[in-house]
Image 1 (cartoon, rainbow, N blue to C red):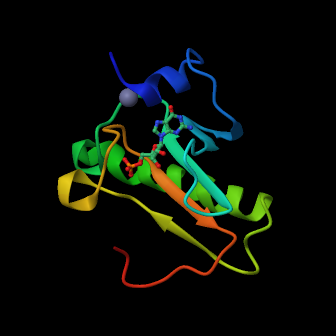
Image 2: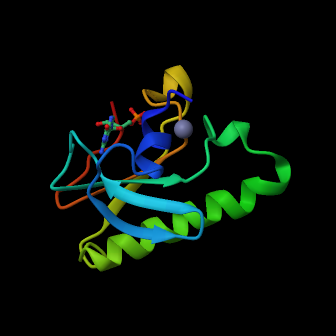
Image 3: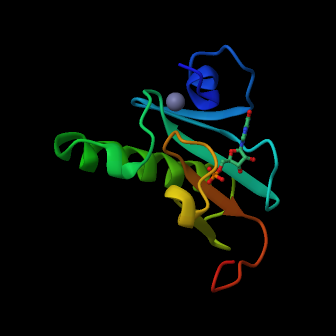
Length: 114
Ligand code: 5GP
Ligand code: ZN
């Protein structure tokens, strides 16, 4: 499987891991778009949220969000706030086809996003 995030999950490519959850991993984005920019991924390969089975959708997405919120608190973002984003598919701006939640914090976010 030629997937960069699967290779990070397998430890084949180094990453700055900040937390591990049940079946999930959080590591810093290589090209940060905010002072804090962390990616939270399932360890197993799933292209996007739409590819999860009905049975796994709630537990997998729940665990990714749970870990993202935990990391946000751990990194001191809870008081000032932060943004969680899941880019999905071409129009969503997804560039890595392995499901991931972006945790962005440390600056004022704008709306609407570009
Ligand atoms: P997307 O555009 O799919 O929503 O987000 C993919 C993210 O993965 C981008 O923010 C990009 O900077 C990040 N990324 C791509 N390759 C690597 C890598 O090898 N290591 C890390 N840590 N982040 C990566
Ligand atoms: Zn993958």
